[in-house]
Length: 261
Image (cartoon, rainbow, N blue to C red):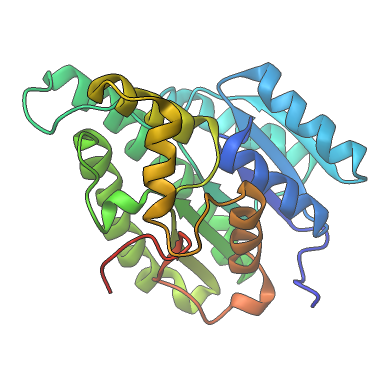
């Protein structure tokens, strides 16, 4: 199937590794020119090197999402080298494990700025040209916690859920302009973030990481953690011409893990 991504310009946030890196590599393999953004410049460059080694086109950007002043200059650099952004993949880091109560206000503010306000601001910056061209994709990666809140991830559950309401509302505003907006939810995908969360749970409960991972795996109907490339494949389809009638949706990529309908 031709996804129609050849020569499209994609900006993938948090693409130095994990889910973002997998998404960037998949989009590039489908012919998109990819701007790889990450707070870690070396990690972003490593993703670019993997893309180029596979014959793709990419550039790296060191980007602290909390610094809203960098949006204009960074987008200008992308346009200069790859063209205007056709596909935006919003993918941010998450806060550390915390209960919902008792968190300092400054922590809420800090993570809201980096996880939510940054996404809204970058999207607002690329939307005008998408709408003018009559084509665009805004795909926002959140967490299964927005459907079934995850214990001890209080800040993540709350902040990421705000992006779901925003994306659904935005989809109605820009749909007639050929721009789709969708949310993707990862289940237990084998990334460093999931390893970190397993380690923290093991530490809290006085268990081994292997025991925690085995228990988690047993709760997944397909019986394993997901491969980041499988997540990237789903996002690439949503970014494609073939997904032009999918918007305002929340897509679960979880191996059947989330228990609710």
